[in-house]
Length: 144
Image (cartoon, rainbow, N blue to C red; front, side, top):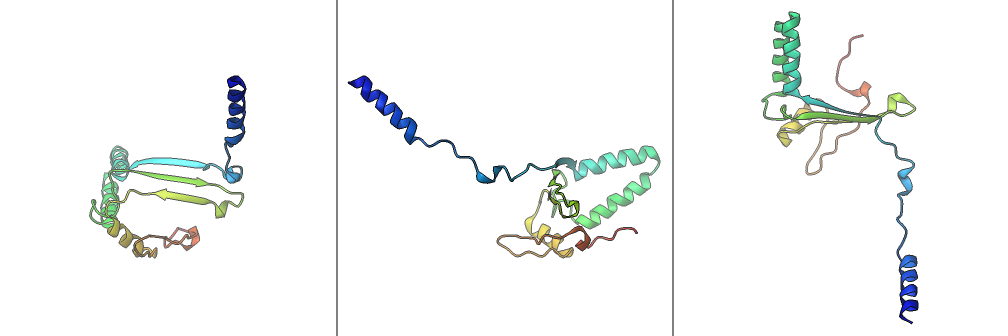
C-alpha cells in the first residue's frame, strides 16, 4: 500500500509542478550588435599624449588636454575620468534608427545633470529622464 501511495504522490508532484515558463518575448529580443568598453578618459588621454609625443605633435596633444579640462570642468566633478566608458547598441534594418546606449561614469550627479543641460538635455529630479535624440538633432557641428 505504501508503494502505491508513494507512486501516486510522485505522479501528483510531477503533474502539479509547472514546467519552466519561457518569456514570450525571448524570440523577439535580440542581443546587442556591438558591446564596447573603453579605458578611462585619463587612460585614453595618456595613450594619446604618448603617441602624439612620439609622432611630433606634443603641443597639439596638450591643447586637446586643455580643451577637455575646460569642457569637463573640475576633473572630479561631472564625469569620473578614472573609470572606464561603455557603449552597446543594436543595429536595426533601418541603420539610421538603430538604438545605442553610452555608459558614462558619473562623479557628481548634479554636476553631470548641469553638464547635460548645457547641451540641451534637460532633466528634473528625482528620476532623470533624458529625451532620445537623433544624431541630426545633437548640438554638435560636423564638417561638411
